[in-house]
Length: 171
Image (tube, rainbow, N blue to C red; front, top):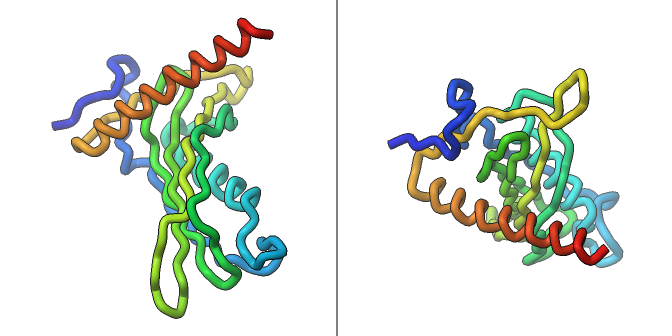
């Protein structure tokens, strides 16, 4: 059963599948730190690129990164391994979108894969003329897993907005 995540803009509703993306990067010496492992900043750059592709595909508008949430590095990726970056949309608001990005490493000789990082990235869609926030299509959730992920995303959004409000009150 397909349930919209929100009730307006349904005419242009899109599914998680419509915008999901995967990127593969070979980790080379110029991507590494002195330990021979992928730099965290490079991982974050690749995460931002993959998430931007998802946000662009969903909104079909220019997008900007608004926030990185819950960025976690779980394991290193070594020179000569692949970084596999999987990204999909989890939440849509009026003009913003949350994208989940998971990173795996793959050893090219053994084929062994392991989870190495996760991030939740918020993007805002912009009107191409005014450069102001612009509405995006709704998200149609097609599975129980997508609905559960969406519920967790709503809670992350609530916490993110509460942190922002608390920071403004303290400033």
